[in-house]
Image 1 (cartoon, rainbow, N blue to C red):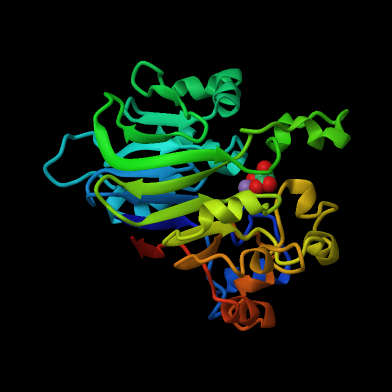
Image 2: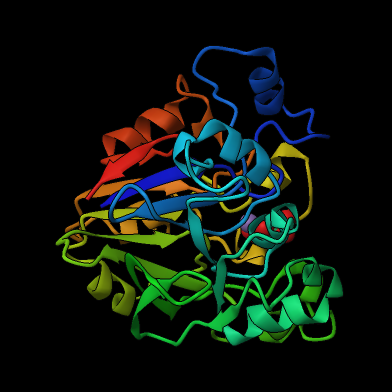
Length: 312
Ligand code: MLT
Ligand code: MN
């Protein structure tokens, strides 16, 4: 079972197009130890041939160009892809906009929760993916399912999706309901356990998570690998950096550091590899020479980067 991080940055990517913060400047300048990263996505395959993508980022065209496993194979049809299905973990722009780049009458399947499917339905531009060719299937809550291709043939990838504390997509927020997390509901954002038919290991992919509750720790215990929300190092990082007024928690993301942060909350949970993904362009861990980067590594975490591969 192979899991590949195809995009390790949060929305905006790294460097972000309009960002003049020191980190984006360093990435743009090619500073050693400050790797550019594309937006949030991972790929998984049980057989090395059939791939399931988790989230379709706005950088998907570049990601496919950088990932031979996701490209058409010699000898296959003139128009073809090893991407059999795409699972969406929420309706955020960084996770769905890439669907628009996959038009061209190519069959594959989309899996998402009812809320995320509703967001696709409500935006008719997604009909560039003709549902007759690209079926949209509902992800059942907390049920293990075999991911199939457009015709329903098994891909060998099995997943289980379950809600995690998070937030409705920014563009769907109800500004009149701040006390109600802007209208967020369970299922707006999900975690996914990824496994392969006939394989033992499992990986959890959780690019957005607002809190770590005991129930989540119980689920994660014993996993081979965790790919977890690494948006911010400190909750008020974007405010302190001066790039915007929002905290991590306002955006539905838990900080890495602090008493309630992911590093401390997961410290006692037995997990094989723990890797941060969905890293925002303000997060100091993006600079490998930073004290924050060293602290995260010393705590047993890896900082995900594009092209990183995990064998389960
Ligand atoms: C998030 O992860 O909070 C969103 O991707 C933010 C956004 O929509 O840019
Ligand atoms: Mn995001």
